[in-house]
Image (cartoon, rainbow, N blue to C red):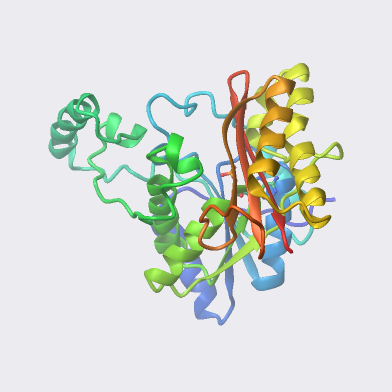
Length: 317
Ligand code: AMP
């Protein structure tokens, strides 16, 4: 049954006005940023947002700033109409969907645009980090960096990823001006980075982390799962299985991280996955630990065919 029809907003000025009007009435706004192709994991964030704010904005925007030119921006799945249907039926509903076309288009400055296009293409060859935003020559050159936290885990193999995430989240915060924003712990490092950014830059926004939602067989839900063949999907279950095994081994007293990681790497590799990283880190600093003495999170990224999956599990001992 349809809960309510959200208003669909594509222009940033209109989004800001909507939000300001709501907040001027004394109501709170919660933001759930997404890249679309929504699944139950995204919808769980909306339900979480309802606990913290009165009106909910879901943003749908595939952010070119967090993809390097060699990554999967062009094949990132989308289904706008399907997404809207899901948002209409989610428990408690959604008040507004913000789906801008291009958040890096600053319009009527095409001379500057073309100039930067050439400069930035040249910089790619010079070994600088380049995202699809510079590659397309949009003229955008301001980036938010969380200098230490962005370097480890996913940051090692995706050097433009977190500056792209932090920058687009900053832009969304400035456009939507929410009171609360909800992020999934599925992207654990991302959640911690946004928390740190909000603290360090004094955003007056509460950041909420929401639990990982999994399929009944344990696979963490992800928009990218649609690209897995049935065989790859079966093999990919090795990630969540090894996380569960490591967690129970740790709870039974096996606290040496080297051994826990080796076992997970072996299980995933034997299943046919290619490990990007398997790290056990402290939950806030994301510093690697050798022995589990306090709460940690076991984070894994692995490739199955052309699909890179990430997953994690908190171990609270
Ligand atoms: P994405 O559309 O992949 O950028 O994700 C948008 C938000 O949904 C992020 O905060 C993700 O962490 C969150 N999310 C994605 N998958 C899941 C999941 N399986 N469980 C919980 N949150 C998720």
